[in-house]
Length: 307
Image (cartoon, helix red, strand yellow):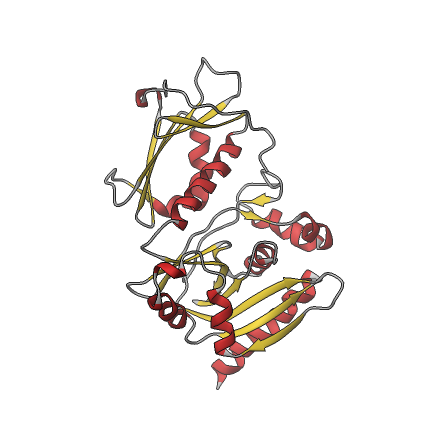
């Protein structure tokens, strides 16, 4: 994934904080992340996705993760270094590569949380009503999320649905979207829409990753449908409705930390999906798949709302 990586070795001589011109504090679901850098462009890109997690206070509300992003005169020209708590953990010649690595580190911190229930899923919403797409890596969740966002759905997350147990509420966690090359090549319309929707990017900044508009609009008040996608390129798209028991059971197989909540975790899943309908979704041609989803899920929503 990171093709320009240089071998990183621990060094005791981490640069002093006074060498950095820019400092930001963030809080990701009770985890404090303090970032210092002399590369202002980094924060411009970082805040496209994670600006809502920015805080003005350095107060720690949980485990601290202190990061220094170094670009100093004694380094090789164009080299960027990332230090975590004083230890050099990453080197590259592309500061956006640093961004991706840091994003991955933050995701890892969140998955170790005992405070929030974490579901391996993507989530979009329209008018506060959500479509949750759950399944293992490679199931096509992110491609479907991107396609729905480009059809005017609000982007909540593409990887990790964060559930606050105190309110049974879902907290948005936007991050970069990775769209598979096969999906882009088979759907020129998707590529064109990505270029239009991306935040100042005319092309993906790394591989097939995109910065998309992450404004959450009305956010998410309830989940209307849970989809379990599976990519079958040689077949036509199809949807099979599941019983509530089948759907909730399958959802339990796609959580990061359900065991930490024991019975309370199941209660949370039932609470956030109390109004949801569950479907297995066979995806193939992307445009046909989207038409099917909008007809079956949003069409059903419209007809029920009219009654």
